[in-house]
Amino acid sequence: QVQLVESGGGSVQAGGTLRLSCAAYGTRYEVGCMAWFRQAPWKDREGIAAIYFGGVSTYYTDSAKGRFTISQDYAKRTVNLQMNSLKIEDTAMYYCAANPARSCSGWLRGDMNYWGQGTQVTVSS
Image (cartoon, rainbow, N blue to C red; front, side, top):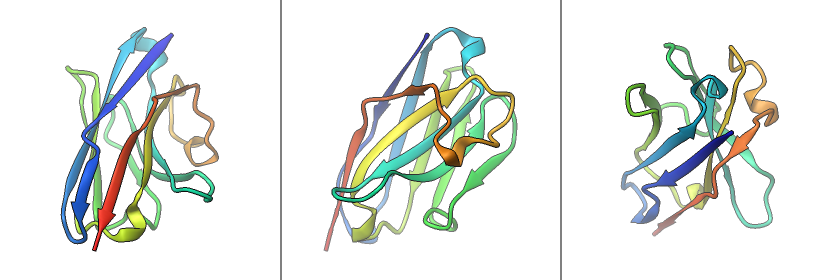
């Protein structure tokens, strides 16, 4: 079992920055691919970025490219999402997710075994 705990959400003005963190607790081998998703009110869940934990491969959707950066601290079992140039449309609940897969090929489908409880990001004008 893996527990994911997100932190770092909050309120910021458009153009500002936030850094989200996700700490993974539990069985180490259950954490392979880690990813960030978000869901705004009345919208479907959307994948943002993914990283293979312990590897170098990172993946981004168009919503994140050029503005968001996913990174990891392997020793601390933490994955971070640095969000720059935030826009009002980035307002959403952000979720960390993980699965034990040896690649992130299924991340965008939401094939994740574990989910955090989410952290709210609110961007205002």
